[in-house]
Length: 259
Image (cartoon, rainbow, N blue to C red; front, side):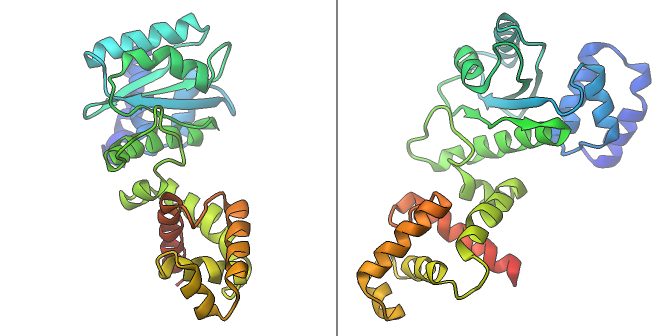
């Protein structure tokens, strides 16, 4: 849905004030990336006021879209929560829900997992406000689209499980995460930071300690120490193949952005 179309629908809302229509419209706006004052007003109408805390769950329905939506709504109500925002995108059902009563990411995911098929299920971190709600739906959709790239996907998938794949699909949230929390942390204040140079060289030489040490004219033990320090700082270990892919993607994104 284009931004002008969303604006037109928002302007016509006064003639369509039933709760179902408002919740459906709110979901579509958040999924489309809208989080302006008009969307905040829609959220206020359904009781999502201020800096509310929320998270999202998404996957393919176990039976039908309607059956999954009904089962999820009942499960959240049983936990003491208010009606979640539920919508679809292609074959996926996406659900954004507030943190309240017994509704928390872990508890809710367990409660609603049976409503989804055995295909990948995604669970977001808790975020706040309209922008946070929009982010949860975006990252859920991109993660489900990226999930086939993993041979053995965990259930549920989490925020960090598919960062590089989400970035490849064009997810700006994932790109920002890789740039700010991986590349910038690893890069430090200077391009010649020894830890950054060691990690980037190690990755460039296919994970060879010896070639990295020779290129940088340092002892292999120094390479090991710097790689360990980088893993502790960023949370990603260059000696692990999966983590190395994340680091390579973050470095590529960082270099392109800084250029």
